[in-house]
Each structure stands twice: as C-alpha cells, then as structure tokens.
Image 1 (tube, rainbow, N blue to C red):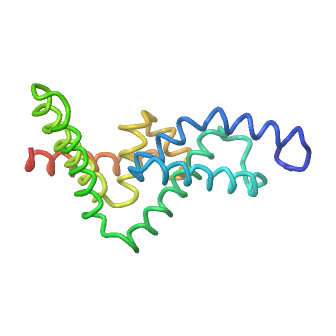
Image 2: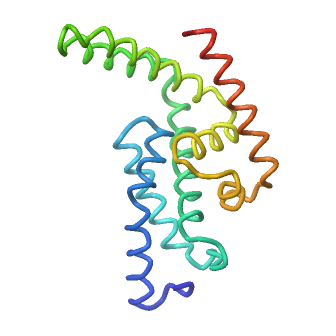
Length: 181
C-alpha cells in the first residue's frame, strides 16, 4: 500500500478511508460547524492522503494519521473562513438560527431548546476562541473521545504537552462558561 502504485493498494486505501470517514466527518464538523465545509475538508483530506500515502509510517495506526490530515484540512478551511468572514458574526447567525428553530417548535419545549441553544453557542464560541493546539486537544479528547496518549501519537506532541494543553483548555472553558451561564 505504501507504494500506492497497484490497484490492490488503491483498493486497500479506499477501504481504510471508508472505515474512517464517519469519524472524520464528525471531527471536521466540530471544527467547522458546517456540514458542507466538513464534507469538503474530508474530501480534501482524502485527496491529500491518496497523493501522500508514501509519507505514511506503517508503524503507527492509519486512522490516527488520517484524522490528523483531516484536522489540518479543517484548520486550513477555518483560517480561510476567518480571512473572509468575521467568526463572531458567523457564531451569532448560527445561534440565531437555532433560536428561531426552537421558537418554531412546541411551545412547552421551546424555552428549554432556546436555553440549550444559548448554552451550546456559548460553548462553541469559547472553544473557537481557544488557541489552535488547545482547541485541537480539547476537541479530540472531549468530543472525539481520544486519549491523551493517542493524541500525542497522532500529533507528534509529547503526552505531557497534550495533558498541559488539555488542562489549560478545560480551565479556560470552565472559566468562560462559569461567567456566562
């Protein structure tokens, strides 16, 4: 598979990527908060993996390497979006659309949905404001359920560095959410 030249290698790579696709889409969505952008980021990652399969280290799990490529593709899209759209306006529009959906639903449940939408918007805004490494570690541990050891292996950071970034991210999120909620 590392040579990437034979049809069997391409088929094996396609099967591996299909196995990782759902997790990759969830991860990209948590970074981008837009299904279309997440799908495009995953497709970009597929293309990058296909073209750069020779750089894959077979001693490491394929899924971790692939998910790292997905995270980088999502971060690239995030940076591009920030150049064109103010991130705060995007978060406000999303929170407003969630609030409108909540009001349009059942009256008894509308207040609960509105509060949930406000809390979720506050969490997203707080996580979006984290530095890149803290956001990466926070997302991979809290949303994707990976262990610090897995993240260290996938990102090349030491396990201690991953734990420090996680600690700092959690502290910032708790402080921000404690002040807003």
